[in-house]
Image (cartoon, rainbow, N blue to C red; front, side):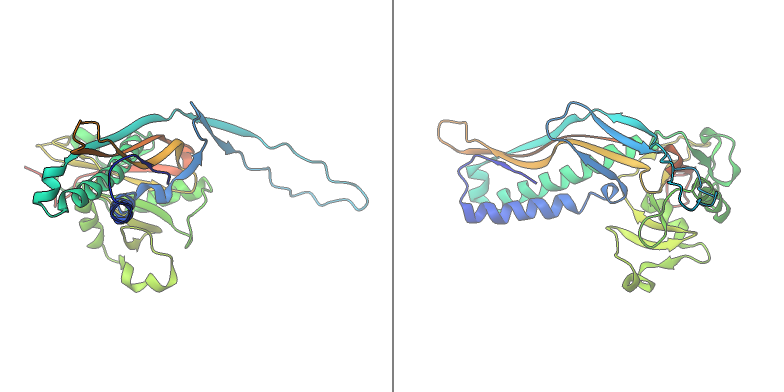
Length: 302
């Protein structure tokens, strides 16, 4: 991650502040763990290729006869990166009266904002996907009631959809699910749910991973949209997303980075602490991305 730095901040202080920015930002980038990332510096648009599988070679080879090559067939999903960013301005007086805490807070808050923003943008793009299952047999999202929570049969269906399309799994031979904490509380109550502590030594644990159930490694994200009063009787609904390899992509023209600029006032009392990036998320292989829309008894159901 490159940083743009142009401010009157001591180098040793800047090193510590930058580290707090990186830690705060990285901690929130949950979705990127299941995302195919392609970076082309300063590109206006970026193509994410999807290669078709080769036909099964079931015919025996003939001795002395060379094998006829087959062509690679691919389609492209084009993503157009857009500018994203945010900034706060810290005054010298604010930093003095807080014994330097204002600077530290600015870097941490900007780092957190960068991660949460990217995660939210990506999740919202995925929530607009077209492969949707309504939990518990509901007829429409507007008809979902408080008891229409995710069932084991719903998860079996999604796993089957991914498997029958021969979608590749992530390390550990599992698919990935990202759900809101309200939904995950329902999942943890289902018989057979395995807490992360029982298999942590056997896998590289993903950020915010909380357990395994029905062929999915479950990640928690409060960035999942709560669709307020979208169901029947003012019932909140949630879009839990399920991923196989290459189901989701991120095109980066310029990676997210820390930017410290200024001072621009005549006495040098202000610095601007912000983040900036040019990127876009998108569903790449529709077969490898599914959604379950459900309620949760831990949400608002009045």
